[in-house]
Length: 368
Image 1: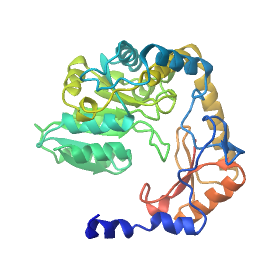
Image 2: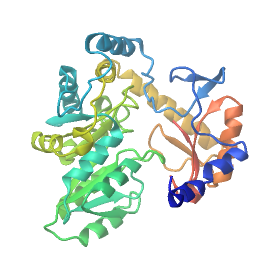
Image 3: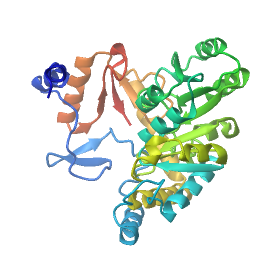
Image 4: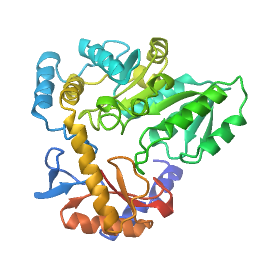
């Protein structure tokens, strides 16, 4: 490796410094399936770090569906959706998802991250504008970096700042507002009603990232737009399968015309191998369970509200969360690592979130 690049790599000491203190919390090997309890180093640990909001990752019906898909289709598709990698169950799932979130059509991607990379980068051109909440997910930010459009950030959930930023843009320019439905670290809910009003005022389109909203809010867990009764006002709805839907992959839903465009322009779709059969079948089975067992969502919210109540009563700062993502603010990186380590040693798995993922004065322990 050339010296300049090697020097840059060698200068990275962030992880080493934490490891030397015995506080390194990442890449912990789990020896069991994701559940309320997992096995780490041969010991049972309470899992408060998983995004399996509805507890479906070990559901026997879903596992059986995955096994049957492997028996019928094999372990992979050996190609992209664009070429030889489209199965009939891909198309079945796309139809299910479009109906689920209230849109005309949908298309599957191999991961949720790839949805945002591909869709955001292909929709806008050089004279267009992408407007992002400053706390949007990393995949949205990376999608904006691949786009030829100009990116503008507004202060987190600050509708006055959003209006101010939009008011400065050319009236005839294409504008796309992209925001998380539920913000992945803070757990708060986007102010979609105000975004819709402002978007209509300035002629902007709206894309919702529902990675943490599906299975959590809206009719039968169908997401943010449904939660607010604004499905017709949101142009694009993005979702992932790695959380409530117990699998891996993602999708974008919108009009038939928009999805047709994405299918022929999104490079992260066209040049990636398609979702494997077992993953697709798992999502279909998960949707069946969500629709037939709505009490799972009720139980999720009962658990969430109970946990929030106890944490607040105990004096913890949990911010303004509106979701099963409960941040406990520590506001100091070193203390966040230390407390995570103490909890781990006492059989509790949580996720530390420190800068640069969040501002340095907003480091937190993320319960979910």
